[in-house]
Amino acid sequence: MLKKPAANWREARRENARAAVLTAAWELVGEDGLAALSLRELAKRAGITTPTVYAYFESKNAILDAMFAQAAQDFVDQKAALPVTDDPQQDLLADVRMFIAFGVSDVPRYQLLLQHAVPGFTPSAESYGLAVRALGATRELLARNGVHDPRHLDIWTAVTTGLVDQQVANDPGGDRWTRLAEDVTRMFLAQFARGDASEARGKP
Image (cartoon, rainbow, N blue to C red; front, side):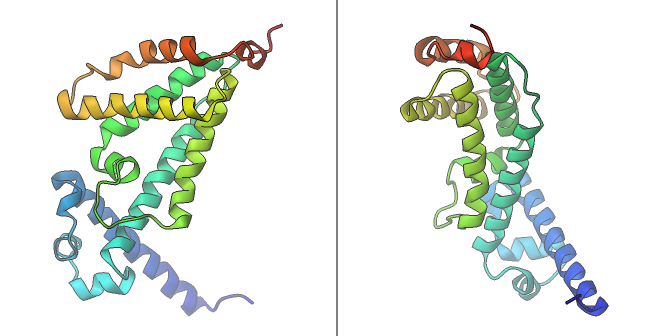
């Protein structure tokens, strides 16, 4: 059954209002960090009352969950936009460079998505599923390079997030750690890649 025009209008208005609240939330945490996200400050930033915020989100955690979903979807989309070539090592390097740029360009977004930086907040299964998709894409990319052991995926994520963490903490705005992406990729593959990586390139 088709929705009535009035119902469609109300739904669109509600979605627009939710989007405006989320935009204000990102602006707020972008300026003052995740700890600055309070419903009172958010309402002030969005130009509405606190009770009005509750009309669109049932709690602060619901807002964080929507922000988490946005961050995860953005990450998935950026990974999917990377070209796939016949050189899996270069594709892996392009992926880690994208990940580092994603992390250092918006620290609160990175912290929300990957650092569990907000006490008491756990993303919903739906939102977290987007992050799982991104990890699955990384797993497939490593497999193309002959890396299949789940422990080695854990090492890869620890090393690459470490580059972002070090860059953000010790050289914000610089490139002391981000420029190590190629060295890290080559060292990792030299240690953990197996001979079947050549098969992924279509070589005998």
